[in-house]
Length: 239
Image 1 (cartoon, one colour):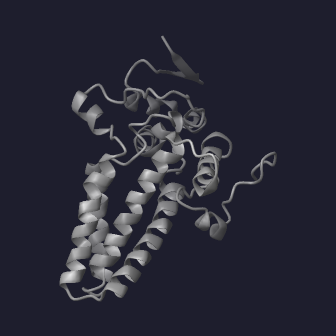
Image 2 (cartoon, one colour):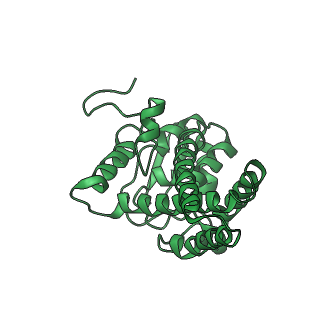
Image 3 (cartoon, helix red, strand yellow):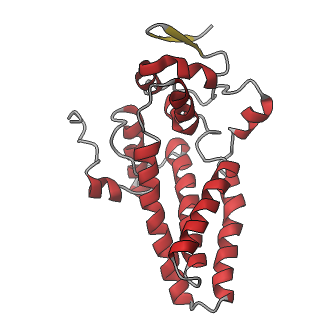
């Protein structure tokens, strides 16, 4: 039986984890950032349906979402938006996504929790990824959850932008999300030996295994530079 112990509570890694981790209380933060390196992920739920919904292969993301991107772009075309403007709006949408990617990762996925339900929800959102960073079926966001967030963002964009602008801008943002999730999978399981992909992999592995409170960008380091969350150079401690 494999167990990890923190203070007065023992987490049994051979049993479903979701409803155990809340009991760690203040010790959860330390526990979740001590990664277990294994491509075989843990079981989260006793219920088979809930367990299935937590697992998503990386290729599901482009298959599900790229047709949606194309639909929004085609909607912009049918509305008579010129092609150069569509391209500009899509680039703008991708740029907005990079800020959302950074903000969610920094302020939501790395929120500090100590209570039972706070720890439990955080573990489902992001903690399980830090505890088992090589679990290939929990690296991308399940489409059901992503659809809820996408619907909310679509209504916000419709509310804040002119009607001809919204479809292409949202389509660009959604394309940015697809690029993000595929990049995230690749930096964990790909084996680049040079270039941008190699740098991104080193940058993200540094976030997982050295300094978890720095380096929140996945597809780029831009917002870490802007907001001062670049990790220090190797050998230097975070302040």
